[in-house]
Image 1 (cartoon, rainbow, N blue to C red):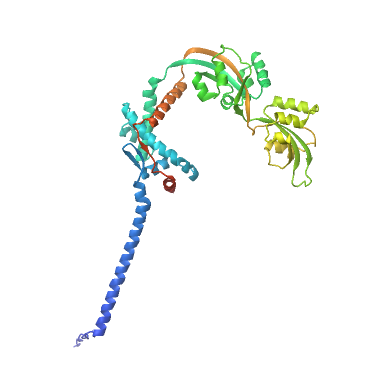
Image 2: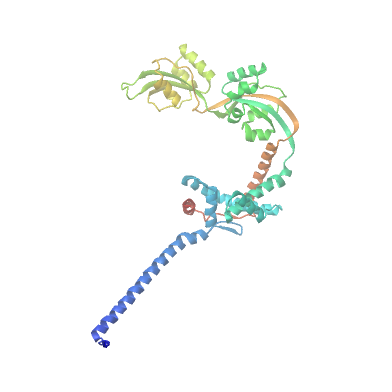
Length: 425
């Protein structure tokens, strides 16, 4: 038989061993407690940082319109919507505009409600769904605003715009000189088409794009949305149908064209530097440039004519003597002639057209195709007029004493912070 071994009896701990064991247990408990405290502290610090750095700022009021408050979180979201795809610089520029837009959306909502014009939540959500946009508060408000504006434009403000008005059907071109206008006028009088003769010459953007043919419009729309000058419009509404104007001077408009007369006097000693001693005159039209060239070729004094006609800065002092110039000091056209065309020293250039220069003044040529004392407005013109009325209405809301708008909470620091948040996503 196998004998069963007897269990070993445990010897009782000595006082010293017991004391050591108790100290180890206390040390372990303290270490565990300290670890818990450290972890808890880290969590608290992180949570506090998130609360102070994100949660609390996001819930602070950014803008208030009467009793309606918009949080910083809302402002950041609106900034994301209106600044989508923009650079940090552009977003910073948008910061103050976004604040104004938030207030305007609320003003329009309130005032439209007073007029009995509203948009249901279902309409807004359907529009957002069709566009694949989220149903967040800012997107909902933007969607509602767009639908409200459409209802106001094609409903409420439609009744405030007439169906017809006095109109003129006009052709117009802004030309660089009186002689050019007279030349074009002769061709039109002889039966040539206005657009073919003058359209490509116009130096005013809208008439250039339309090749001079503006069509039927009322006077205020022509002034505000087309030629942006009273000179041709006043003629069109005072002359008889079929009339062609004399050259009409307009000193307020600018044009992107000028003409150089250049004479390279000598070259610098160091050919690698590429410097040249140049005399130059800058003029605002070709006819004048040709005239000045003829006078100079006939022996007229360069400095005298430069002081009288040149548009270059400092001409009163230097008489057109620019001294030693280097490539890049003036325009590309100037450099091309001086440094790349191998000009003969002392020989005056032909007039050199430079469309990088801005000069003032020119001459309108106007053809009144037809006139009507009362003619139905086109849909485009009526929409323009309705938008004008609506813009005036919105502007009046900002002046309404019943509305208290406060965006003083949005200082430079808070807007900079909002831009940073908007750019994170």
